Length: 346
Ligand SMILES: NC(=O)c1ccc[n+]([C@@H]2O[C@H](COP(=O)([O-])OP(=O)(O)OC[C@H]3O[C@@H](n4cnc5c(N)ncnc54)[C@H](OP(=O)(O)O)[C@@H]3O)[C@@H](O)[C@H]2O)c1
Image (cartoon, rainbow, N blue to C red; front, side, top):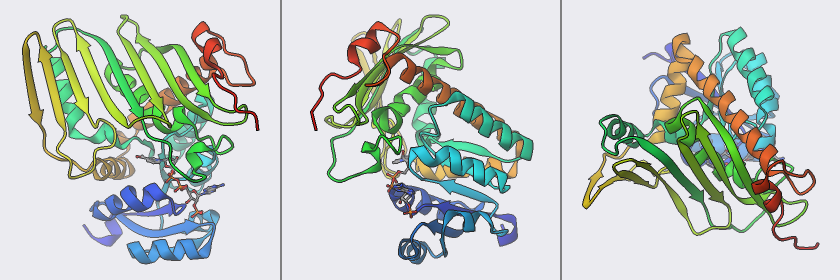
């Protein structure tokens, strides 16, 4: 593919996830051409650009003004996703935005509408969805390996880290729901389908002005299949899901963030019989950015990404409504009991 045929892409923000996972994947995607990275500070932009062989730009607006860039990747703090996705779409760029896009269904729908009106791709970066291991799980379910699915349980929790990371900032819309809980909730959307709703939610706040550090969410589809999602930012590491059916259970370890060289394991338990498969490794970031590149090139490949992003925002919005916050009382018993379990006075 010639340079002219590849989609020129720019990065807004010299973010850790861009450095470690996404930009190395962008460079390996034959349909994309990394043009520039923009940072608020020239030094950061330069360091990033030297590492990845692209141009350094100071200021996000300046990158959006460039005509040699047709698409942008937005790994900014969650609170800035809506603003910069909107600015990028209005500048005529396809948008790949990090999770969590937003917890406002209306905001997500506005962005999806803007993208559609302008004929642009708009995708939330849930890389795990593109790993082949989940296709294997879906095949097993479709083949009747566990009978009729009854319950999904999904957990993603990580240990507390040092430093003033954006994931602990309420102002920047960090918190356990948007940083880790979004994965199990997205897995519920994947396995239970479009027809799901949030039945109950609990979030745990340690400080009145802090962000949520843990949570649980119960969802169900119209047929009563349920999903129990647990997540947190101060937990022993856990990153897994299981689908339990009338005749068996499928378990997936390292479900959401397997490294590209990790060969994932899927386990089927059925009565006394246990079968385990070690599947091929897959680079889910490369597969995710390749799906984005396809959506940039092919209008037919666009619609589902925007629809999924709006539904995910709507589910997160329901979780927040049901769980409440330290200031805003919750609507349900589960949430009301858990709005703030411990308050450490400042
Ligand atoms: N898909 C995944 O697997 C995955 C994994 C981790 C995180 N994420 C998501 O990716 C996004 C970035 O996370 P990260 O951990 O990479 O964050 P990070 O390293 O802190 O990067 C965020 C970047 O945003 C820019 N920024 C703009 N305004 C900021 C402000 N007020 N405070 C701090 N930074 C600001 C900074 O870039 P400049 O200074 O260069 O302008 C900063 O480097 C989040 O939405 C997160 O949820 C996704």
